[in-house]
Image (tube, rainbow, N blue to C red):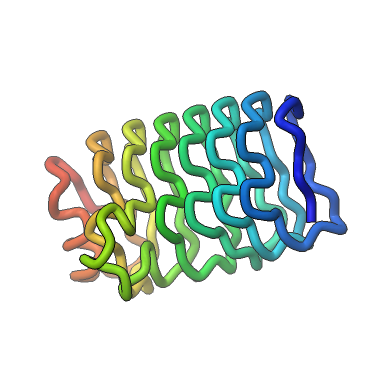
Length: 184
């Protein structure tokens, strides 16, 4: 377990002995620009990096890691995220309001973007990428089983969805509210 002082700045490499980045661990660390998360980390906790306003890049070194709710919310400078290849689902608010995020490659292992059990029960419950105003392209697998209706709210610049495999009804419906979108 680690808790990082808000004065931490520049690039930060999480130590290889760390198994979990605790809830709110880097919250308010406004001067961190890049985070490298080693293979040993299996969980990024609730709001772990929320509000890291200068964070530009996140590099997951391992394949197996869970990303909790709001983990990277309001990281306004975040442009690049290398998601773990074994990630199963993206949860509520994980990248909400990351206004500099331009493209996302969602690994084949991701089956859910949002949680189907919460759909329609909690307002703004599943806005995984909501407010990512510069997001223009995503790449997604046809193996995906569920995408929340609100997952991409406010992503008005999203114009291209690269589908690895066949275009499914789940994918088409998830982006039906975005005008001018194309599927490749």
